[in-house]
Image (cartoon, rainbow, N blue to C red):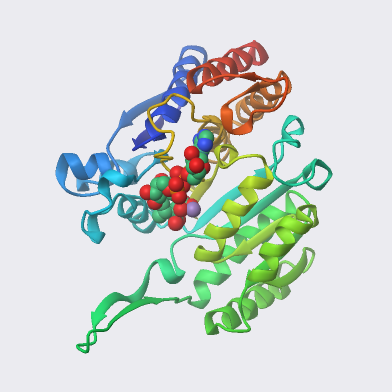
Length: 370
Ligand code: NAD
Ligand code: IPM
Ligand code: MN
């Protein structure tokens, strides 16, 4: 019997609130499915710091490494604003990404039909939107050395971050983007700033060479990342797959989130390379949003990004494609019926909290699965 091991890291703020709604779906699937999932749970972020002085413990890190997939909620919050930089909540997420070598972050921005009026853009600009941002996740300025603040001794300090990319890092993320493009619109737009950054020049060269060598059937464009941000809000439907570095990908995916109506809608999958022997990839599934301290504890957070991240987990880690499609369809149907959390509320819709949104999606998932 297939055993599927999930490791849950709900984290801080709205992370645990959103994760609770996914747990209900797992419980239902376990009752219905052969094998189902085994789950274990750990601490990450501020709650881990409070418990053991680190943003993730070595024991939980080992469990994440051993699991078939990790489900991650969100980390951070004002309570931990003053903790040392090395153990701030976000360091837990960065360690997970780095140690698990999750270099490929897939951030799909899909505008559900019912939500074209929830975007800050005109409905006709976002209706039918389906773009995929492929963000490099283990390199660039997030991890480059040196990374420090030095005292210049004259009353001045210097803050240093370093953007570093090696050929292999660009090659492998470009490969992921081209492969995925072949399964959808067959177009890739690569974004960097080769006009100012040496790493941007190399990025552009390596993406171009990778395309020529292995993927010339896919249409490839290049855009400077600032212009790319502008194009994302001017005419977002021109894009199919966008491939970009760690920092530009972070910023562009928050921009893309608003095209879909809310940051509370955007899921993501963070994937490693397939294992040479088993073909399995290490994987962590995380909503794009953070811990939302302004609404945490109020029971009003939108759980859809977290639930849709679990759908990505079903698809990418367990090849449960039918179940993933059904869960995504359940989300779309519930939105069609006018059920909305506050962040995507519209005239005439019915406003619900986190729990009711989760329950309604679960009921629809059950009905569609029957
Ligand atoms: P945020 O994503 O937490 O919130 C930005 C805005 O979007 C807020 O107004 C929030 O209420 C709203 N929002 C976010 N998710 C929502 C949801 N599911 N439903 C309804 N509204 C939602 O970003 P921030 O405020 O810049 O950061 C807060 C903390 O979260 C910081 O400590 C930051 O480092 C951390 N953060 C963590 C992650 C992560 O864990 N993956 C991602 C981003 C930010
Ligand atoms: C994200 C977040 C993280 C990032 C933070 C919390 C480290 O903003 O996943 O988008 O910058 O990558
Ligand atoms: Mn971000």
